[in-house]
Image (cartoon, rainbow, N blue to C red; front, side, top):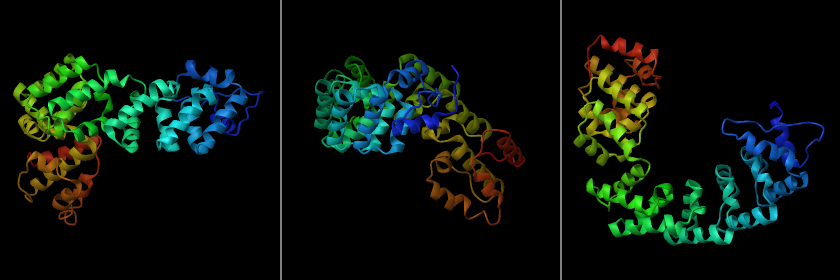
Length: 370
């Protein structure tokens, strides 16, 4: 298939309802675009009259030309939907509960197939159940934005039993609502599996009253047993005991959700280049969540430089990396940058590359470790 550079003109033609029959256009192809599924149908099989009707329908519901173009470009299959039978009833419903055109564009771009679900048998019952738990349309919309699965799955089968189980465990209703709004996929689980995860979290010693309980559930729902063991093995490689791994998970559950590559890079920098002990990271496992280039490396280089000049005393890992940005600047950068301009150069984001190696070589001559 020959791809042309005329995608902009195609989108213009779509918006204004014309398509020159003497020329062949293709949509702008992006890495996630499924050519086999969409392009032929969008270009050759959909009657012009139907395209125009669909586009006009979105206009009547308040969509801007930009929003329509974005949606059509990313999800051209939307043009194949029946405007009266498929689209209009769903657009009416979303409008009635307060979904703005911009938010709806985002939802349909994420998952256009949601409007193919039956309104009376699927979408409305799902909405009514969500409303019974979350109480406000704003909260329901926030949850749907996070996962359109909420309008596509049988919630009485895959969500309601799990929410009931959380309540039985003593998780406060507001915590359940927060979890449903922010992490809905963690709750849409086969109930038997969800029950096993709940029991594991309880055995680890998490308190159901605290928000960290639902955070641990969220992490474990994204793991298989083998994935969990691989992550544990990675931390063991850096000298962590099983008890230390559990202690770190209980402090910051998301430390187990970080990619293996990220863990390796952070631990290598902190232990091998900065001289911290692996046990120091156990005490503040949140450090593996932070950006290596934008936060960890610049802060460590600044503090190491100040130590080399005898301007500060040795600092705890959490003090260096966990401190709020404004506080760090006030404490370690602003007081010294006038006399030592290099502090500002060290603080800028660093790519893990030759630039970092150069900075470290310059500081290594002082033999000061954090």
